[in-house]
Image (tube, rainbow, N blue to C red; front, top):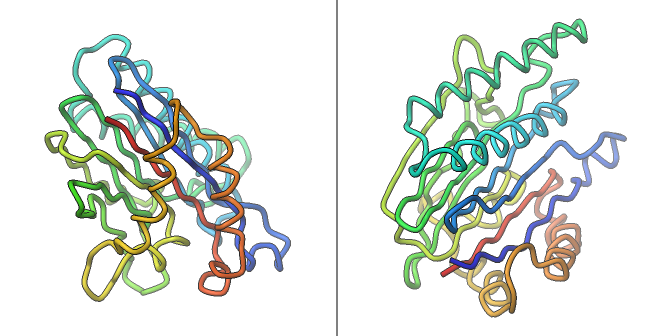
Amino acid sequence: MEWRWASASVIGTSHMRNGDRLQDAYAVAEISDGGILAVVSDGAGSAMFGAYGAWLTCRFLSVRFREWVRANPDLPSDEELADWIDELRDRISAIATQRESTSRQFAATLAAIAITSDETVTMHIGDSAVVGRKGNEWDVLCWPENGEYASSTYFVTDDPEPRLRISRRPREHDAFALFSDGVGDLALSHLEQNAHPRFFDPMFRPVDSASGEGRLVELSAKLATYLAGPSVCERTDDDKTLILISGG
């Protein structure tokens, strides 16, 4: 399989006004035997080290997946994935102790997908989302989850354990998108609980038709410009991360 993707992460206008930094992070990596991995994490705005927690989450999982697929023919089991999250939480706890802080100050969400020629596995904690295209339809593979209150959600660092959702399905989609909650109101219909084709169809046309493989640098720059533009920022002042993956 030849994968190509456009990806961008831009700071929200509310964070710019407050002098904050970008809290989102992401990673995309091709893995052995024609597979691909993508991770999006959104650091909690109320957490002092939320941006670092998001970076740690993306970095940790991308390393673990690459190490795994080099040594194993199949993707890891649900139990192995849950163990990785426990290991990530232990690492965050150790770093928090070094900084005389708490794990809660590294709070971050998680949306990840690993795709091989015959299987798709997702991992999800919080209010980011993953969608996939099958034919002309867009399926929501991971729906964003809010916490007890509308403005709250779930994090990797939640105590006593995170609200981790793992799903696996046969490979039947030919395109995927991952995004943080700053993109959610643009891309999803919360009333109908589905993805907006009018958002995803035009976004994917240049990715589908692009030549070559790997990260599409020019399209990624255009994507960043779009996410930082007034038409988007008028609808959301949050950080925005979007990964568009197409492959055959």
